[in-house]
Image 1 (cartoon, helix red, strand yellow):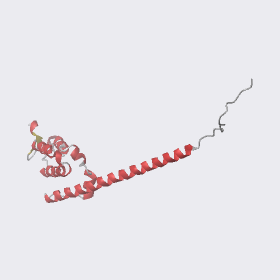
Image 2 (cartoon, one colour):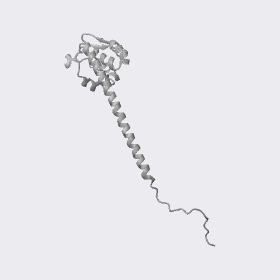
Image 3 (spheres, helix red, strand yellow):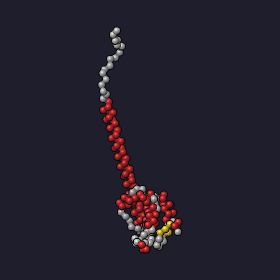
Image 4 (tube, one colour):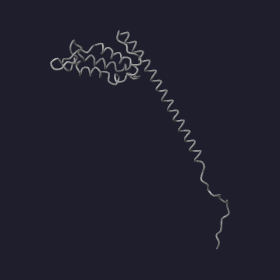
Amino acid sequence: MSAHHEPGPAHEPVEPRRGWVFYTTVGLLLAGVLLVMLVVFDNHRDNQDARQADQLAQTLQTELRNAGMIVPEQHTIEQVLGSDGGAVCADPGGHLQSLRDLNGVSGAAGPGLRPGPVVERLVDAERLVVQVYCPDELDSFDDYVGSLNLGDSTTTTTDQE
């Protein structure tokens, strides 16, 4: 018997689909749009941080000037403290702790090695930085400063006495 074909539509030979060009183009366009969005968002965030750093640096300059202290250039303050207070706000008493650990060493060796005073102006200046950049840390900073003996010749914490 011979093979019998069922009646129905005749199929054309299947050619490779050309839709991949369309989907690749759409995918590349979407990736490009996402990239542009990321760059614009990042620039906006950087600009916002720069404006905040500028404003905080100006405020700190005013506070230092009002306290009769030496006022660094605004650019220097912005580089060191940024918009978040940098290392000062990360550990508000850390700089004072470092001075205490060094005991304000005079630079002499041997028997001349003795502690020197921590200038209270440094403490006052750091307090202003904490006040401007991270006011929520001001109470803990004041507590730490209160634990220091800022005497004529030594700087120690009250727990070392």
